[in-house]
Length: 271
Image (cartoon, rainbow, N blue to C red; front, top):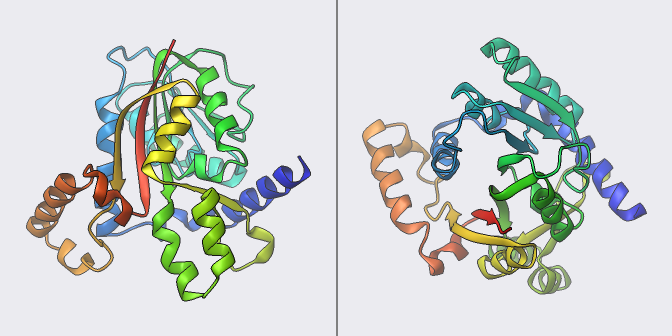
């Protein structure tokens, strides 16, 4: 438990520090494409009833939760970082969404402050499950707050993407640990802000969800194409559309997921 508490504190410290500039860090044409690719499955699973509640777990600065609120839903935004919540709260006020959103400081490992079997849709972008001390327990917590048949859309770090990091460092022990357990470390410059990160292959993620009582509805990698190398092309709208079309063709091919840095899964809570 002490190790878990220490990891959560390091996680919180890092995200508190970067909160005010977080949106600037992840800004630009390649991130625009990333966000739209991530948003499409969430939009597809928005409840047909606008009165159905939605929760954004690890909301960060509110990128997705506020977008859902703008469409008319009531959204609860949670995060481990108080400063991230402060940024999200300010953005909600600027958008005039105060009546549709609520905020809660919470670790995904303990969602007991949220009502049981309440939410129709839970979002966990920004690798909340990867940052959880125990991803299996975090999934159980999410299951508790979802209604039967409620849907989770989450992103996680993809294991094979980290191989080059350990190869470049000639860190054989780290490589063995990564491939055995999927675990690595958040590479913050400040050692006090480093914490364990859990990565997943597509197979391991499917298995984890099944054990937790979820039916997998969709799984894809993001992104197969090296967007950073294509960033100059993404400045051109027509080229960006062509690149997005290619990415959509590639991202659900199982063999292509090993090229991606992240996996995004949509899963339904089984009754």
